[in-house]
Length: 234
Image 1: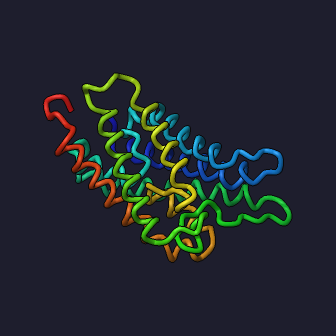
Image 2: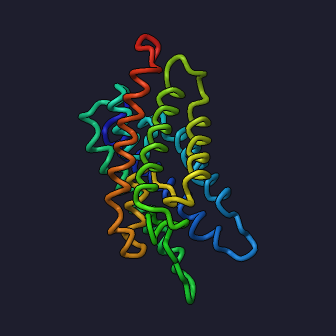
């Protein structure tokens, strides 16, 4: 049995890794001349951070690395509500630490320009200029589907050992779809870390990237429980 400190530490490290790895690919590699990893490369980077983190740290904390996931798992009956505050605090602090490390690296050369610093946004701060409504729908729906995949892949009846792969690939697909709309959040912690170091508009719009993913996670958990779960096997 792992202690609360061990669980919080795993969530801190995992969310740090997700933020540093995923946002780092967007800020550093995607903008580096001649590399051009583009949307597909950044999407894969986010998926790989969750995949590797899930296998390395999941046995300790469950590998949430995302406040919305923790809320959804609690709603789905897979996680105790009383543990939620400690997880969310650890995740947000991990994302801030990951973004801070990335900021130090990204500004470590003369004339450095961090641009949007992988922050999330809508309207003028959306990569494709998408509206608030489009961003809201995207984040709610993508997070809901993410929770359905997580709950299904981690059910006892699911193939053992493949949950991390399914979840990582799902997050990759989510990014492939939604980077043009919001730069993809589906994770309030991941949005908070970069927003503290990026342009001020990211902080102004941060509220959406807390509200929409949490609403989506709750909806996804409710849909799974109502339509897809088998309480004896989940």
